[in-house]
Amino acid sequence: MSLPPPLPAVIIEPLVRAALQEDLGRAGDITSGAIVPGDVAWRAVLAAREPGVVAGLDLAAMAFRLMDPSVNFEPRVADGARVSAGQPIAEVSGPARALLSAERVALNFLTHLSGVATATATIADAIGPFGAKVVCTRKTIPGLRALQKHAVRLGGGANHRFGLDDAVLIKDNHIAVAGGIAPAVERARAAVGHLVKIEVEVDTLEQLEQALALGVDAVLLDNMSFHELRRAVAVTAGRAVTEASGRVTPETAPAIAETGVDLISVGWLTHSSRALDVGLDHQAG
Image (cartoon, rainbow, N blue to C red; front, side, top):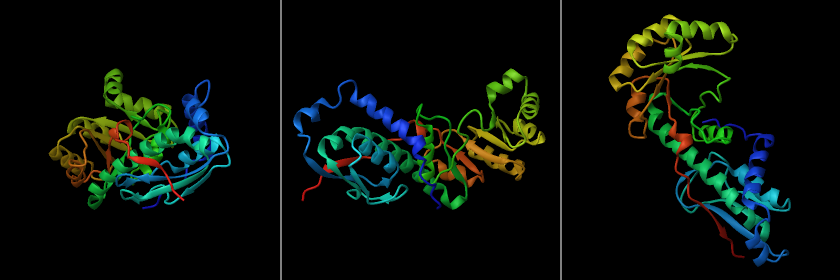
C-alpha cells in the first residue's frame, strides 16, 4: 500500500495552534506553571496501549514544538504504521512545563486520527480479497476534514469528495426538487466544468437504469440489499463507478464487497470512530 505524503505545515499549523489556544485559555497552564520549575527537563514516551494504525504524529510533534521550539520529538514509527499494544510510537524531551502543557492537545490529535486510521484498516482488511475500496464521506468533524481524510488514507482507504465544490453528487432531495433524475443531471452537466464528475444516488434498479442512460460517471447504490447490489453491478456492467452505502460494518463489509461494487462509503469512519488508546508516560533514565 502506498501511503500519502504528510499534510503541509500550512494546513496543520493553524489547527494545532487553535487547539492549544483553546486549552491554554487566558492564563496558560496554571497547574504546570505552579508546580514545575521552569528549568526542569523531562523525557517521556508516547506508547500505544492497544493495537492499531498510527496517524497524527506530525500534529503531536507540532503541538509540543509550538509550546517550546527546543522540544525534541523523535518518532519511533511512521504515520500509517501498524503497532502492537505497548509499542513506543515516539519519544519527546525538553522543558517539562512545555511538554505537560501540550500533552492533551498532542494526544487528542494522535488518538483521534489513529482511531480513524485503525477503523479504516479494519474495513480495508475485511474487503481486501474482493478488490473494492473503502472511502470516507463528508460526515467529518467540523474543522478537521483534511486531517480525518488523511487518516483514512493512512489506514488503507480512499477519499470521496472533500467538499461541495469538487464533485457533483445528486442525492434524493436534489432529484425531488429538480423533478427527476434527468433534469437534475442535465442541469448539473450544463453548469459545471468538463473535469467535474457527476454521481447520482439511486435507491432502485429503475433509478439506476435512468442514471446510466444519462452517462453519469458514478452511481451511489444507497441501502440496497446484497441481492440488489449484485444486480446493480451486473446492470451497470462497467459503464459507471459503483459505490455502495448504508449499514456498513466490519462484519457486513465483506459481503458488500463480494457483490462486485467498486467502492464502499462509510460515514462513521470520520464522525464516530473510537479513539486509539495512546499514553504519554515518564521515561526513566
